[in-house]
Amino acid sequence: MARHTNILYRTAGGLLLATATAKLISFFGHAKILYTLDPVFFILTTKFLLLQAGIFEIVVGLTLLANTSSLLKWMLLLFTCLCFWSYRLGILIVNPGKPCSCLGTIFDWSPWLQTYSQYIALGILIFFTICLIPCNPRFQNSLEKYVPPKN
Image (tube, rainbow, N blue to C red):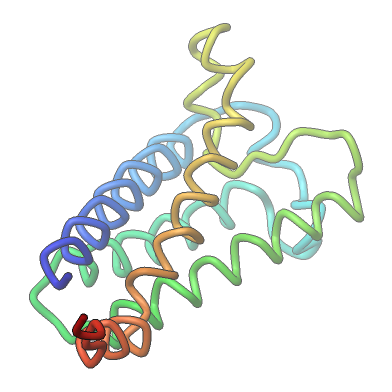
């Protein structure tokens, strides 16, 4: 079971590094949306928020890829999911029907990617959330202690 959770953690870490890269590339761009105030964190510009989120994702992504405690990895992934779901809920409340700039402006370069960027971001977030179940240390411990009944 530990091998499977390592695969999930490494996949999540790789995805976080990819999304962090997209955010940091967007940070150096000059799109108009980068200079507007973020709808949820209304005292920060979108550009500055992308920088903060990108750095946070790099730290969490590298921790998920490192050889650290399984409990630490699980708690970091849980915290990341809670932050991302809270932000998406905030976007839904403040700007219903408007797209989230969660992945930055990198998808503006391609019309196809721009159309599906919201689905990509939501799919990644759902994957992170689903990873929490089998990676939960309590879940793993209960599976290791389980002894199937003898016939």
